[in-house]
Structure formats: structure tokens, C-alpha cells
Length: 206
Image (cartoon, rainbow, N blue to C red; front, top):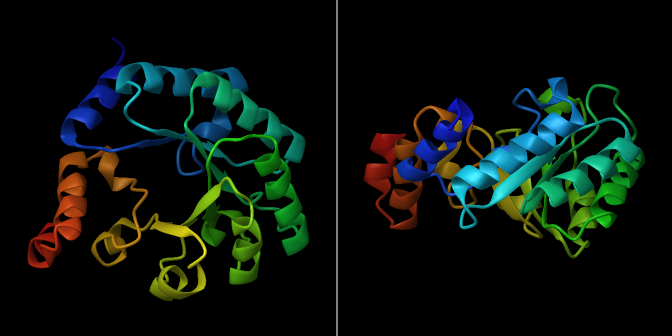
């Protein structure tokens, strides 16, 4: 078993409930398409069928995004995490057409990530409501750290945050955590404490 597979097995033992792989936060842009598919397959093999795998799609090329989505589905991904095209600041309509083309190419459940710090594009409430009309779009992963964005504007979708420092207040929505790569057991305990209503315990963990 390689180091990556050992890491996945350890994550499962520590209580991680899903894996987001090939996302914009990691090294996916430096991998070849075959390598990205291999990452998904290895995580699937190590985690087993009971742990969902969410594959990130972050590209400025719509055709490449569609191809990546289909490869991820074939490799065993359970869902996709779509980001706006990074860095080149397309129009809002251009972003929506890009995302909608990828969404239409697959029947996998979709999470849409709004991360203007990385992509330089901020998906506002109207854009998210439009995307939510698609049957397989299930949630928004918010990277802005704005509590109001989760609690108010995105009520049409399930909501998650990528900001680990705000895990406790955001856990009524959900967290896609980078910190869980290092401290998965504490992150899992934080989530379970909030779900159980043990808020003082959750605050202490946070």
C-alpha cells in the first residue's frame, strides 16, 4: 500500500466522512488527466464504497471541464465540485454557461464552489439560484467566509464553507475542510458535537 492509500485509510479511521480530491486547493492543476483519474481510483480503492468521493473540476476550458467530469465519473467519483474558471475573469453569463455545460454532461450530484479569492469571480445569489434550478446541483461551497452568504442568499442550496476557522458557526451548513488533512479526528468531533447540540464542547474544539 502506498503512502497516499495509507493516508486515506487513516482519514477514514479518524472519522472523515468524505473526500474532496483534485480540488483547486491542492495540486490538481499540476497533474495530467490520467493522474487525476488515478487519484480518484486510488482513493476509491482505499476508502471503500461507503465513503463519498467528490472530484474537483477547475479549468478555464469548457470542453476540458466536460472531459474531466466524464473521466471523474468513470474513475469512481460520487459527486463533482465545480469552480468558476480561474484567473481570467469571464463575465457572469460566461461563467454560468461554462458551469452549465459541465453540469449538463453528467448525472453526478454537483457542488458549486464560490471562491473569488482564487478565481477572481464572485458568484452572486442570482447566479446560484439559476444553477440551483438544475436537478443535480445540490449545494454551494462558499469560500468567502461571509456568514450572511450561507444563512441568507443561498437558501435554495445546501451550503458548506471552506474556511476552517469558521467551522463551528458554519457547521449548521457544512464544512469542506482542508484542516482535516492534518487533524481529521478533531474535525470529525467538532462536527458531531455541533450535530448533537454540544456547543460548548464544539467551541472548545474550535
